[in-house]
Amino acid sequence: MYALAELADRFGLGFTGEAGKILTGIATLAEADAGDIAFLANNPKIAAMVARMPHPYGLKDAHAFIERNRDGGPNGSVYAVTLALTGRFIGCAGLDSSKGSGLELGYWLGEPFWGQGFATEAAHALVDLAFEGTDVAMITAACRISNPASRRVIQKSGFQHAGTGMMSSIAAGNVAIERFVLDRKTWASLRCWGR
Image 1 (tube, rainbow, N blue to C red):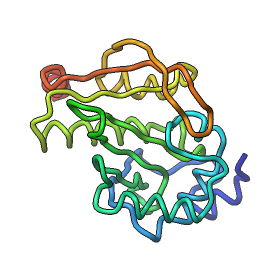
Image 2 (image 1 turned 120 degrees about the vertical axis):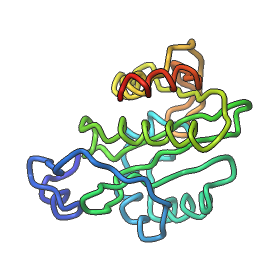
Image 3 (image 1 turned 180 degrees about the vertical axis):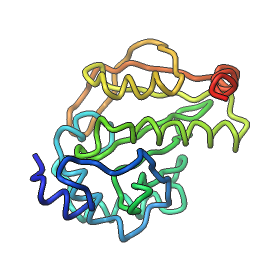
Image 4 (image 1 turned 90 degrees about the vertical axis):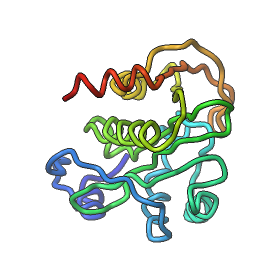
């Protein structure tokens, strides 16, 4: 659990967690983010929900993560999710091309930033980036069955349920997941509705 005073000081937030408008930025990971990455990622609640995050998570892990994902990483693009008002790192989002056709959307945010719309905003930005900047036909996403908040982010981004399966998590072992898919035609239709 995070102390409110520590969070307010570290991230420039008021004690009620307000950050002004819900505006996030998507930026390249930087060495300057290592401290915030280690601070936020060292949380068993996050590690249990993602595939490739160990727990405990320290500064050495953060530096290795940044180095591994320099220039987008080996299998896609990993971005820092930042608060637009302050530029502070609050999590990561990425598109992974290692699983065959299409791209897979993934993300995590530090616990102090859950429930404020930041993950949805970052997911929308990456979905738009993928479909506007590539010729990919579909994007997939997955979440733990026990993670309704992540499921909601995926659904609000236009993805449709495509089944269930298992995922290997460094921190949690083999876990049950739900799989989702968003094809280009559906995305284009959803974009038109929003105008």
